[in-house]
Figure 1: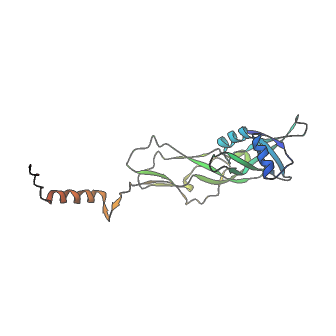
Figure 2 (figure 1 turned 180 degrees about the vertical axis):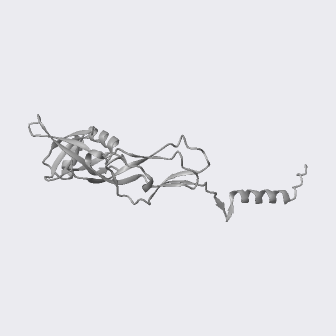
Figure 3 (figure 1 turned 90 degrees about the vertical axis):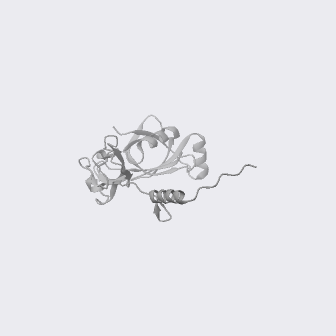
Length: 218
């Protein structure tokens, strides 16, 4: 079941109006669709939904009418979120209304699974892609797409085209995009030598150097 969010219509616009809303713990928002609407949201409720649903979940936006006794339900996706770069708090949300019988294009998160069951062959797992762009009906949007690396061995990789998608979901991302790579461990170099070579050279120099004479006591 998709998450819900209650909204109220607002008339005022501009920075001062937005500041007054935030002072009341409310968040300014806009709904884009056949008819754009200026909205305000409960700040805590909107932040909680954004933290859990992100921008890839279908949301039922319940807009209260002026009598506040009834609501209009709108199926929406988050179009854009403005976030405070320091505090990480939401500053503004833009929604767009979707048609339930028309496909939408969006990005969903990729989540690595099976790392604990994978044989430790000394390789380093590198995730190259964190989101997959897909197209599907709003009712078919997956919360996430899992990438199982249980059988991934050193010097092997998983491409976008290797992923299994839910029924009705079409991939937009290029199929040859790297998602996960199991790389051999890198060896750092010191002035053109490997760390091991540098250590061996230092040991040889130490063995060849004459021993220091003990200090004479006065």
